[in-house]
Amino acid sequence: MSTKAYAAFSKSEDLRAHEIQRRDLDDKDVFIDIEYCGVCHSDIHTARAEWGEPHYPVVPGHEIIGRVLAIGAKVTKYKVGDLVGVGCMVESCKHCHSCDEGLEQYCENGLIGTYNSANSKYGGVTYGGYSENIVVEEDFVLRIPTNIDIKATAPLLCAGITTWSPLRHWNVKAGDKVGVIGLGGLGHMGVKFAKAMGAHVVMITTSAEKGEDAKKLGADEVLLSKDPEQLAKHNNTFDFLLNTIPVGHDVNPYLNLLKLDKTMCIVGAVEPLPGVHGGLLIMKRRHLAGSLIGGIKETQEMLDFCGEHNIVSDVEVIDIQDINTAYERMIKSDVKYRFVIDIKSLKK
Image: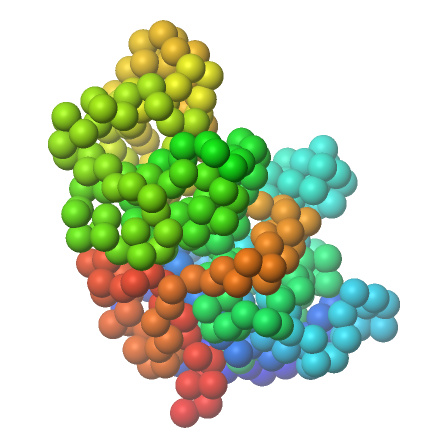
């Protein structure tokens, strides 16, 4: 079926209006009318070929909120009219060890991303949420709480689960001292989640202004990472560090902050980290780890938690026609803290 969308056609061109084809529904498929789609920095990296040459044209978008318009004959989890979401993946092998454990994001045979992935089952390339609608297998569709602002829910499908998953995996709990390094699309969700889990939350940032913003989001303290004296006062005191810095950087000053046997998890820098000092790990048996998104079960748990605690992202809603300007603003960190596209604007 023909669908209006916005696409990138090369790394140097602006995104522009395009028409794509969605597949007909299989028995286990859900047809979703998209209402909102979040804008992730991954969209920029992909559209501009910063993570390798993509399959042009690229229709980005993996933070999708919409309503069920139709279902396949064997769909049991959803009905027409349900409020649903689609995150970063739309298919996995479903039979490897990771999939059996509910960790489809680590599928040993390769997950199928919501956009720019060769679709092993249906052929062609996947197209994302910068579009009017999408067809997704029901096992990769998520139920959205109806009591929270749905436009501000869209970024939960990537920024939310990216920060939720490591906090849950490393068992952050009431009374823990948790540092969130960097305040942006990921960091602001890390602050909200850690606070809701009962932790004592410290925003670790280079900017006093961002520190004040973090306090408004729920942070208990601010640690300015450019101040060696402040850092030294906090050495060996943290139970967990969530590092959301999106580029390669010196992690050594942060490792010093961890207690014996504690972990810093990298969720932002998908690139080399220069000069990690092994001694900082060895002398306190510290852990430097990484985490991707979360599996479908875990993502649903995160959404349910958000419904119970009224947690959403801080967003700025835009029309699709403003996406190229939004990309430039994101690169300059000129958004608090995520852009969300109102897909009704595609009809203009």
